[in-house]
Length: 357
Image (cartoon, rainbow, N blue to C red; front, top):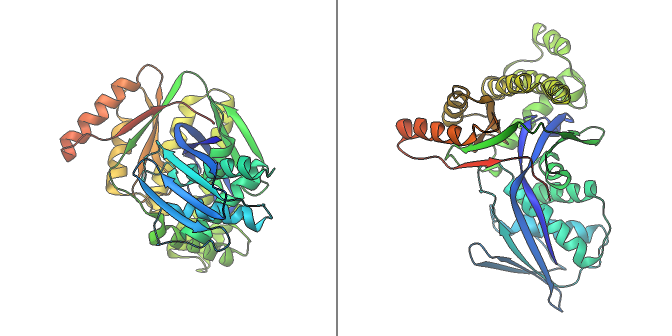
């Protein structure tokens, strides 16, 4: 039995998910596939077919292996099933992935979600997609050390071809929003690999939690710009927590506006909101880098590009560009020339529509 789950690109909603905010994502046309075979014992065997690595552990004593290992994501998912009462039989999982690692495209969530789908089929459970997303999130928290929200897992599990996934992280409502056919996405990798478990992601989350505490709200979703302004004037909210709060509240508004613009097929507006999002991430959330800024600015200068922004956790990874259909090949050539002149290399790119399982 083989299960597939796509990688994802965060279209808008940078670091809003763990603040109970709004996010807009797309599934990609690349992803992870996991094939499950019963072993007849109580072992969990993980076989990474792409690079020939095998990990084996006992289903009764699942725990993380060394920090940063790909295996932790799958082990954590299996542990989540068992903690929910799944009758776990010994199984070998053969894992393949076409999602670039460290590029901000949720290779980890694709692995978690494909593993969850494969185990669901093998172990005969009937968890709904939101519960599978929560199992993937738990794996990140407990086994990979990243306190992520639900954006990545929900987008991967709810992705549908030619649709974006609009997710309210407070109510857990999910809506699939049609993507007009006249656009495509181009993902341009910066060449700077991010590792969210190195502390920067968790630091940003802690700063958001501090801002919420000062503002007297449970999560920044409940905050307003007026409340932030008042806290700044009184001196109660300053520095990094102030900047993080302004970004999150502004980003939630941009997501809502982008969904309305998509419904009206106003792609120019969507592109403008993408550009504004990147600037907010750069100046207020401070999770961009020189390479991402260069790519975003260069992309916007290319004919046919409607907007460009960093996608994912930041601190490296990739830029997502929204381009008019028919211009994508020229866009790739132009951004490649710009990068070659500046850095002496050709960037990796991915042209994609909104994909699904």
